[in-house]
Image (spheres, rainbow, N blue to C red):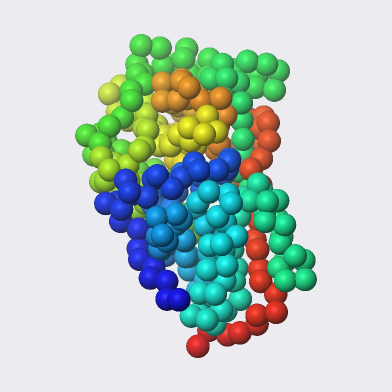
Length: 308
């Protein structure tokens, strides 16, 4: 068996979208947009099998990983075995699966003498009640409501929320240039890849099932957000949220308005992981998550071969 993996292009996405939402999965990987956004950073490639599954291959800092096959739950063992053979026979490596979701791990019940399964706390996605984030009601979100009200008072008559389209890409690119410049050079190494990924999404957004919103103040874009929707889970997934950090309450406003206007049908919100970054963790915890979409690494034991 010789699986043929290829890079993910925007033109491929409409045909690949049908493979998603075939089983329960509350992670941000339950939609295809994250793979497109981070395709360059993780050198993500894919292979379609028998019109039943997508197999994903990643190269993270020079080390190969697979993702769980994207398919119906009952077909995961079949295609996981295909990936295992590919790793063992073609790459001469033990199979390693990165960011496996909890329902799939529980379903697989992998034998402990053949596989090591370890939780990845820094990669678990934060889950929120959509109505709570739309209203910011309750004691836990009181500070967020105060920040929001401060913004509404300070900028009364000067701001506007808009649903963004592909035609707004120049506005977003201009904002991104300023945002990235403010970050300077001593920042997380993934930021430049994130910016390039956003550029890719905006250049190809006509081919993507993507929702976008922005906040204009005095006519200039000062915040924007990009998301996807998982119909099966009734879940909004917020992939990107950027705002001018000097404007108090702006993050609360874009967060709230994007859900109200972009995802009126959502009952659950996935705001992705915190990557183990303390400031990001504090920010995500401050919105009172109701749970987490846990993720795991699966490593095959007893196949200690080396890449040739």
